Image (cartoon, rainbow, N blue to C red; front, side, top):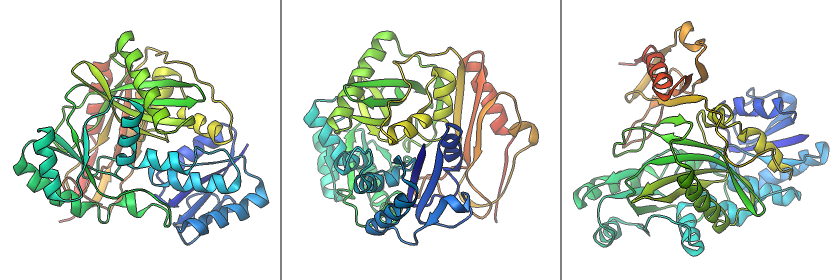
Length: 414
């Protein structure tokens, strides 16, 4: 199979390991970057357009398609799902379509779709200014969650407990979304819906991350992971565990809400990354994205549930039903975490060889480099990387992951 991967704006080498997984699944992968630098993928299968205008991306993809006859177009980048839908439609290749892509990208449009489709979701209000945010607080009650409509990675997402905190947090979020990378990396000329802020009612229960697949009349939960972090007010300290602690009845309820939500978003054939949180005993949708989850969630899915979301992306892109069944945990315990540091200009990262080579690790990736500016809330949400370990129990896996992460040394410029 010959596939085209697209990033409207190249995200460094972040997705290269996933491109390699696609090729390991039997594909010949070509990578088209709107804006970026050469050298991240073999030169004969990588093109830099020099523009992220959607018309230029479509023209470049069409030109390459005439030469190589791609079977499908894919992306792993949240900021490129709308561009991929437009490119695939222009090339006559399988796609969820621009409308479903836009609905699955913009949190306001997503919430409105959930409302129309009767998928359980938190109460929400669009708040383009502080006055309306404060009015929403009076109407819905605190605590609330303040978030960007076009966000990702928990950037500028705040738990707000009072009108005083809203007055503090709203200007921070409003300023942050002006040049937020998840918006600036989008293709130019694509309708993304409103770039603004939402408030949502706060859900106070357990949270779960799901790698799923929508295929015609069914939605499959390929992998279910527990978010086990003690939560602060900036949603930036993710630690995850699989297999899930959900009961069979709870899994059935989660399956139903994800299925209803995906259909409400107009998604009938796509890989999904769903985030669900319980509130007063019921599961509610936080979001459903039309790409796999980040970090090491693809590795956790394979190890803990026997589901491969990366291979599924390649299959869906060419219109082939992936190998998937309803959730069946393997019983192998995994624990994964984001590597979080303080803010500052990074001078060096020292990873001992017996850490990077530890046999218990199933995933280890440093995403930051010396010279990078690490921003922490409320200015941003940069991390150093990801680390995941296996164990005979959650406690064993978590202890190993924590001990290995503690041995990574980070230095900052003065």
